[in-house]
Image (cartoon, rainbow, N blue to C red; front, side, top):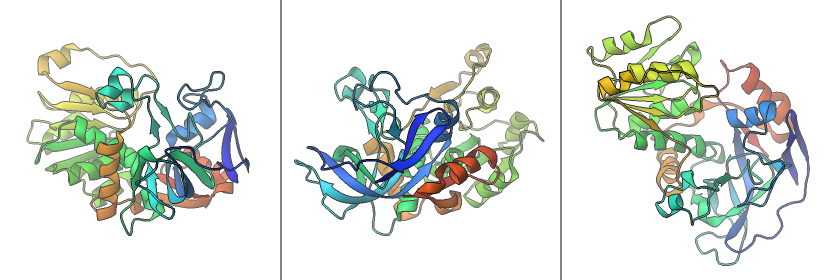
Length: 353
């Protein structure tokens, strides 16, 4: 089969590799219908290995590079392993992609995204940028009728936003500010709306992303390069500030700005992954009794299943976030190129293996 294989930094090859073969007990083999690419794939390409094991195999998957990329995908069941009862050949599904040990302290508390041995398909095991993929049936969520593979592939990034809303304990009618208008930020806007937010504000320097957020349910947008963000948010909230702030950009300066933007006693959920250190005077947190909450990835039966359901019933829209649909052969030359060099015009690129 054809697959996109990460060999080393700046070395991703679309090449022929062996297909997955017959599924093992509890596993499925699917034909991939669509796979999204994201910033993590670009970072592994340009700056990796970040998550991909290269010297020691991952303890759960037993794999190390070279590995097939792709952790946002959906497809059709082609083969069913022994003991699988909830799926059969022809079923349509999207996998949560997280693999966890099931035994550690965190797994026993159903906090599997904190598993001591956490792995993910497409990073520590072969993923969905291929014609076929093998995966545990336990991580798979059946697709609602009518949900396309292109849209279902976006359940993974949407589930990150769903978890952020869950961690932020959003209450109906509360005012929300989202920092960063990339794919996760746009999904945070929609997830906040679906969860009952009163008003939603997006902080984003790129005009096209601000305009899209307004179309997807934001009440107002702020250009942080042209306006003083904290003061503008206070103006929009009667001098108080947002109840909940979701930081989805990962920029160190935005993290500090997000903390300052929340109202006294408000919550700040950090969703983006900062790539460098920043400094902060924690007196501000003590004096204002704000909460700063980390939110990592997603949990299959809480966040991922919700994401699939919301895409299926139309509460969250995927199509406005899709910037291009490409064949697998164009992954590097067009897909990753667009993510790296055309951020103002590109949110989500869908690959159809």
